[in-house]
Length: 381
Image 1 (cartoon, rainbow, N blue to C red):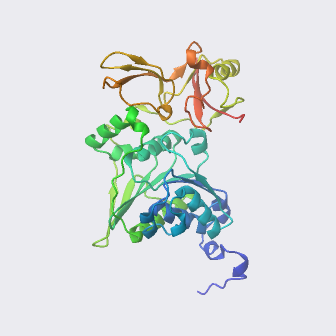
Image 2: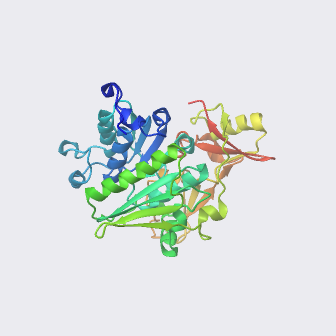
Image 3: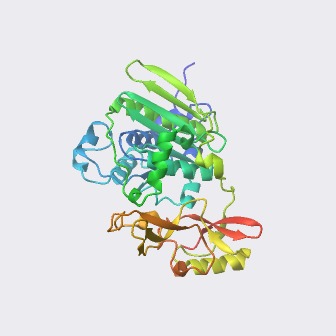
């Protein structure tokens, strides 16, 4: 059967609308996050823009290098030295002005708030290190978000689809050695520095294939069609052989073992992230009869350091992202951290705001009550 197009120049999405189940309105109202703006991020964002996704957020804190130009379709020679996320957002907007493409030049380990991530329909991983994947995976678990993660290695590539807690998550796929090394990094003051990148050789061809597969799976997810949940799909580039692996939930996974996803409904508290913790606790007491604030489901707050060698203390209050001093004492000893995951009102640092302490904007916290945790975000910015 021949399908004739009517006035195709007046509707850039008309060929897409010919797909029986296609809903362009659904796509134009969606919000997605692409983490990583390198070769894979370029392909994912390019495809999302061509398809008319309404809001595309691109997170990356690296600058463009000359070596990126052979693998990243939207970068140019004059872009070297500029922020990857900003250039990718600029070029994607040129591809399709209908899309709102937002660059986020930040460290995804610390600076993506849970309230912001809750507004995303999908999260695409286009990363090159385990630590960033760990943090995105953890947030996806807490918020029950579909995380479509891509990986490249020479001519090989794969896409892993995680829909926790029902399916395995990224942490479930790690072996004991990888899990131990990762836990060591995320608990050490040295981890404020990004994980050292081991440059893996890749070609633009496999980036195109994997990025296309990621977005194709994502489009099906947005249309509530079947996707390969809890599976890895990949290609061996030297033999053109595709493979599929079913992941199993691991008993060693820290998330599946101890964490519970947040409830779908998150409350609002009429307060600013610039308000002190004392002020926010007072408002939470008035509204919910709260006894404390907590964030034990999300991250640690360091409230002091003690050298395990000489025993000398060091003053520091903040999340890991705020630590800028030496990772060891002058004597060479390692700092032991004093950790808090809540605020009862008596702590000396209650005069500080969540932003002062290094929590991200648009975040979610909990109020401790006799009936349990009440999760809330601050709605007065």
